[in-house]
Image (tube, rainbow, N blue to C red; front, side, top):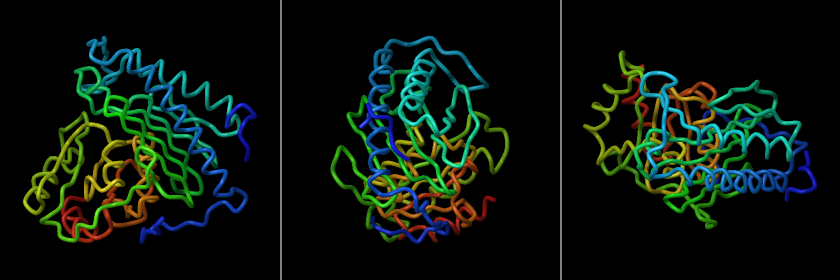
Length: 284
């Protein structure tokens, strides 16, 4: 696969180890990662124009917001990807799409509620999914001044520098992240009971409101792990790829093979993974 003319790890012990597409080289994945980063930065600049302006938001569902900036960002991302990789379908949060053998999963504004309230934790996330796993990821957090990238066969980077997961071995010394769905009316889907249980065993749990950033903070060693339920592939694809490239470990919450299209994920440094699974399996 080649881009349009105008566009220019450490191994994990994941339960889902699939063979890469032999027709795609590491250099091509690197090129796709650079493309995703460029587009995410452009979209992030567009969205930044509305930051701290208290933009008008409407509810797609209870506590699930959308603004004109979500929509404008998605339009830009779709146009740029269509120009560069017309053969790869795009599935994004606001207008959906039909996945293919290879699919771009994009969140044009991950953390819309934060954005609406002027909180700095929001991002633009673009990931490529292929042969059952994420293989390219770019996440840009404009207000934080940070960008993370990763690709199959390469090393993940934070602000252009290689990054790696933490070396924390004990759950009692771990700092984790999680989130909660807009609908919190039942367990275990609400994640509330799981959160209370996990808090008894760890140093702390943060809830910052952008799944993409949470995953990247696992990849760069800030967090030792992250889990969440009831998400979508566009929330997880890019960040999951970046975790893998940083030497992290991914599974579903029950310990089976990770699959971002299932909408739930456990990502850790690998060292605390089994201990986390012991807790999570009590909340299946």
